Length: 387
Length: 81
Image: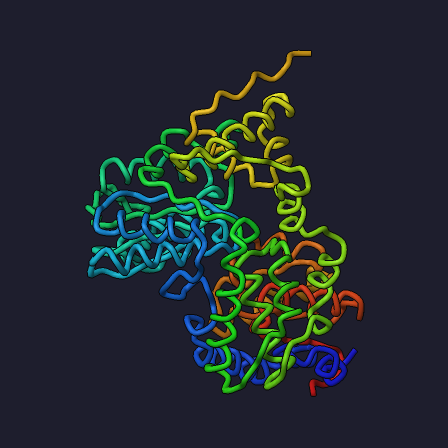
């Protein structure tokens, strides 16, 4: 399969080609092209993860906005949880921007750095600390001086490093690898993970003391499928942003929007942004119809029932669903709905013999979301039966 | 990231790319690359010379799903186009 065939088959892809064995000058040209394209593509223009604001009208997104406002001016350590692609880094950056801290925002993905290099990456090293340490180097903690240090995928941090991080959080001092001197660090720490940390603690993969140190102010970001009101505004925002960036005009038909709003978005906002970007490339200056949507989205629309319709029909009084006699003095709708939620969670826990994962599946929510709701409502889970 | 079936060619490519001052170059097989990337970010994907057409199509599809902006460098035995 040669490059021109690939170009025809994948018009959206950014292909380069090299012949094997690879010549250094040809490789140099390709790498220069790639670097140039990265510098032209300012990711803040197109990627939700580095965009400066949260888009969406859902109650969940409003709550996250309020929490950001509350926590930003303080020095409290924040733990952001949520599935991959929900925008944890966007929230972290917002907290930094609203904090008034003058230093930089420094981000490290704990899952992307090999275990052997992580300590040196975080804390720096002295010259000769290990083979290859030809000069002393400041770590990311030091680089974030006066600013915010964002530790992404903290759930993937090796346990040995967890102990060292805990010490930094307690003493606000770091030691470079190969040095016994302690360096004070003025850093605000924000951590994030897509993992269920209480579960990781149970499994012995995450330290409980570190968890409590980190979750001084926890923020949970719901998956996109649990805040469907955000889908249309997000699509509009990305379409607008990408059309401006690429000088094209793209429209999404009502039918296509309907399908997109029903799709489950397992990759969350990142998947949505990538889809819009792909549509802009495939249909510049056109209208995206439902038939233009790629396979997984169109396919799932046919395969899955529209839960919104199912729910609304079962709640419709004419179909024999829930009937509420409103008291003449009125009622507190929020409180009333919270009570229904509590009852449903309790019922799901009873039916699942206290297995939270199963209860979460019965309710169609993520395990982390359910754990948070159980904690918030202080629901006592029934004990698992002993066989 | 360099994706290839045979380790030697991938390792040679990794060395060359690192020689050109690119950092954190990783190698992987078509079956494992996604798992290796996790939630990390890719600057570019180099597709080695010994992959089948089916592997290549699957890879390009997956890279597009991850981020259509990621440059894909095709390395083939014939001269580059």
